[in-house]
Length: 168
Image (cartoon, rainbow, N blue to C red):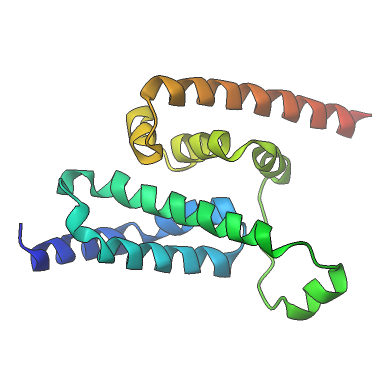
């Protein structure tokens, strides 16, 4: 496949599924502007390495992997920045506050380790098959299944604990 038709196919894919890519990035960074930046950076990275895509049938998992890795890189960089006091933070923050429909579930997801959270997000929020999740995360299918099971168990326990706190 020549470079121009590969560029066209990739562009069509990105445009068609832009909401999914944004939602995936947002699930990691929890901020509209940062998620948009991550999607933009992911597109740039993908275009820069488009020739590494051997099989165009894998464009979905290939690009999801780029978005996941770019999101994780962003989060690692954020940790290095350090914590600022609330006044300083509010003076430099011009972003939009994002609202969650189920804040308890969001908190429970955030409490999971990144590799467990990724499996849940990709499987249930992005509705990907276990095999696709494994390919995106570059993991064994059985590893993904185990992490998914453990993640769901941790979420179940955490949600039960939060239900008890509400009742008490």
